[in-house]
Image 1 (cartoon, rainbow, N blue to C red):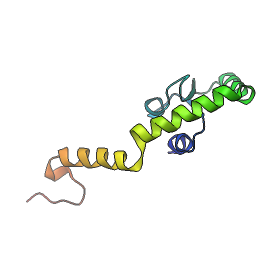
Image 2: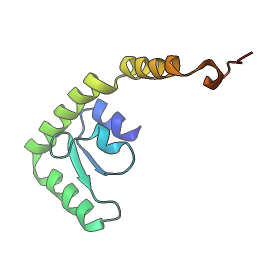
Image 3: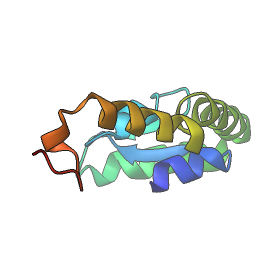
Length: 98
């Protein structure tokens, strides 16, 4: 959620490409993805954003646009609802199949 919150705030993201993060962050467009466990890659990515205000601004704006396009609360709720409706009744949480 932290990645999405940063994108919503218009901040560029530096994150490891693990789990679903790469679904949200587009490398070199909305932020920078670094290999998991690579301290040097983190330092390089953060250093790049510290010295390059234009890149920070552009990635932040792109991230906010991507958040609004794909991850705002209405879209996320619609996706969860669609997934939930697609499950057989016995697999839905709180629903008993008789």
